[in-house]
Length: 504
Image (cartoon, rainbow, N blue to C red; front, side, top):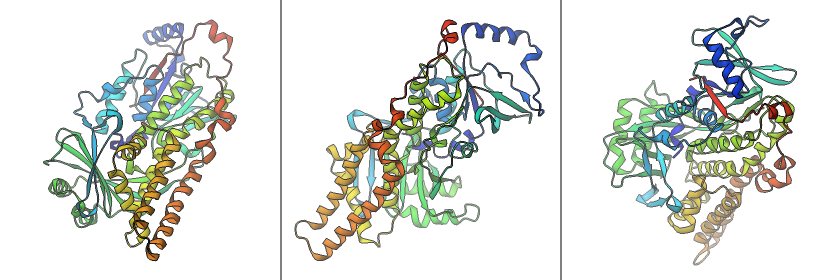
């Protein structure tokens, strides 16, 4: 499962690492220079900023050492990160218990014998960093990126401060920014349109007695809550609190809200543990940010993960989309031996924005649709029917629940499958209203339901981009081929063996 990343991304905004593409000869020179330091290892620039020890030896800088950054650093050399969950007491999740009003429940399993994993975000990230650092040419440092370095319209690297407060500059042919939802570099590379419809409130539940092991909870009542095991004796619970500003934790307003509004909606087996977690006071909040992806990369710099694109956290899709971005970018960079021509690399990487769209679309759209439906008031009969229809649709099982779970989990990235299920749910809701005997009142509610449903789905489709999502092959960037590499690099036998150096 990937919803556990909600509260860990803030730290990653202050971390960054390098990915270095070395030739075998360059490795030997670097090893020699480490043994015999020279004045070339540290040079002062004209503005008094010192050069990093790695300046001149770096092809790619990765800003952000969270899930996406750490995974990308390792993936540019090789990809196989499942063992990062080993030894962290992570829990396998085979199914969800969807809980609705009036005690209704439905067990929903992952399709095709697939399963999810629930874990502590911090433990997972630390394992990812250790995995990246296990590569032979990886160095770990700590610093805070203050800005990007621009020369003649192209990004050439970053300025950062060390833990001791020293300001350094690091240059590279390509800078990849993946410093999370709180990115402080995003605005330099795009014009973000960020919406904050609600906040996620997180607690860790202990001392519970569940009737079923290896099951998460999807609670769809007056508020939306999800709960999933993150260790053998802990459950992470995330509660959606609508509005631009959550109740204050310091004044006790949040605790009161959770006890009076949310706790009565908890399943009986979680109620006592939920109350105890509130009393312990370890409550965290995180804004749910929604931001469409920018389709215009900048020469010398690139955005991926939550720095590029965000969706509501109700489905926990951020990690899924981020890791999907990592795999796609790895495949695009793999055939390149030379990154020095920023303009040609920038044009080539326009294909990334097109190729990622279908896989990100399903998770983005489902998250936004689900939140808009279940965050609305039951006072509107049409929205009330939509809530009932969604829950009952999940309860049908078979191709219906399997199809939605495949989309939610990223196992199915076909946009047409999502459209099919969205309108199938709408048809199911209308049919439930009109059968067996339609009445004028029910017909009016059904007509309004169609209008409300269309009013939710179509704006999301427009925001995501209909052409890029459903007809990517009609966009020229879809066919981008790797730029012609310089003969010099081919002659020296330079291989694309990526060597990540993280700041952690």
